[in-house]
Length: 227
Image 1: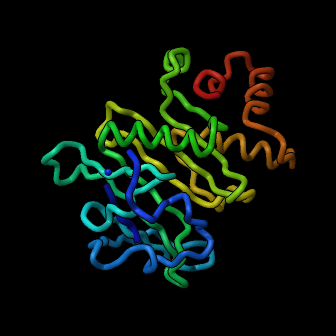
Image 2: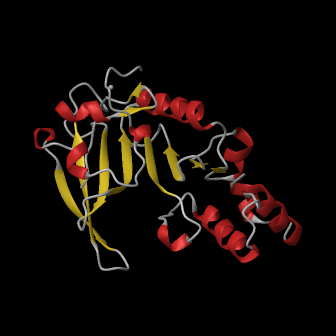
Image 3: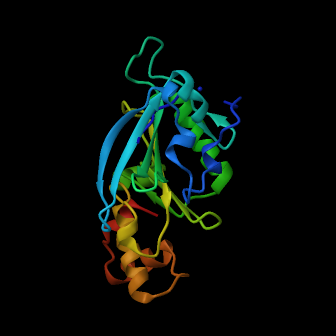
């Protein structure tokens, strides 16, 4: 199922950072009065059907809370579609949630989410840029964190000039790369993961990977567009 939600300090008792993604049931998080909209999300290798639920606004707003920060908001005062929300992905076999996405249309809440992520997780393990000039100027497009405490992977897209100002995807991390979903602007992280797996070295960092690539190719594009 998938939900979309909306609000800096939250008054809700629910917090997305409390989710373990290792047993929570979709119906325990999302209620019918939140007016959830359901979509198909494919089938896993074991043949289990996956779905996602999207919720936004109204009673779903209480779910849009990250590390004590309310993310309720909308693109404009009268906006009907640009409402901050959240999607929960779950397996139909046991209704357990395995991933969630947060969509932010409002600039203030996009900035608040970035602040909340850095407060909770510190500096990211990976940063991507659209151009070499953006890297020089510090204008990132994607940040990635690995939370080893909960074994979660956080991927954060950020562009205040776009309709969706920020998007956060949180899923279980895995040594098995095929079990996680990675897409642009995080493709270089996937390249790194395959290299780390070949080395069978859990201490091999993304920065170690970039150093190796640069030694092999002084014009390596990964060094120009990430750090």
